[in-house]
Length: 347
Image (cartoon, rainbow, N blue to C red):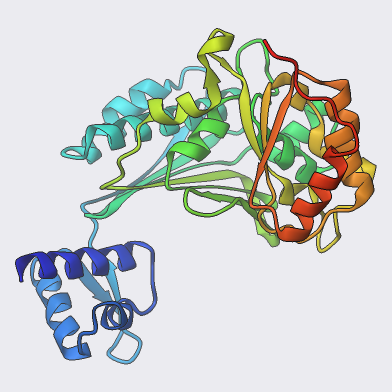
């Protein structure tokens, strides 16, 4: 009975952590309990000060009570030291958290704050740290030029959306003398959820889902990065790094995964060679490329030819693989590859 109670409590807490509008109904459906029975578990969580309520009876919402909730704003200057801010202002709020969760938070926070100092051209940065029994959410928001506009300007790209596509590949930086361009790529992979909001673009990577993009959102001054990690996460930064770093290539960042969806504008289909060239821009810096086709229902012959025939023949050392391909996409890829693309040369 105790194990059953723990499972129900854990489920309710997870639902509230994920901001489900109906955690009680979800628990009733999952465990086959009556609403009254589930209500008793929720009341116990409220008594233990794990959960609190918002709103009146009809529109009442259950939310997790914060263990820590702090917001502070700092001036941006070369003297702002991300490791000191982490050590003095953020780390104390995570006391008692799992070591791997702390290390993930340290990596993401220091990388994002360092980006603000070196790239944002802003005057101030606002930091928000929220911790509940279920997890930690950190937000780093500056008032600068905006990450997508900065990359677009420095790298002479078509537009801000093109800059986002390049950013997701990794190894993209506006200051190559001082940065490797790996921070955002790896931060987006170590957290449960990682999002960037800048100008009118919003990008979200969820560890359980595919990358997705929403545009036409309200204008955001500067850049806001939000990172979320659950309290019971088991992954480590080393495990994530090892997926993309090759010991055979002097531990270089040699593997990337690209959300193909970001090469598409609006509802257009991926049919042209120019779209494929935009997708493949700068990817010859990697030796292993995973194309994530989730959200794409079809690709045209010209697009597939450019990726799997022309580019592959011009870069035989690059190894392509793909995930999430719909049946029609898979069929097109296999048909093109059967037409004579050379296989990667053995090392």
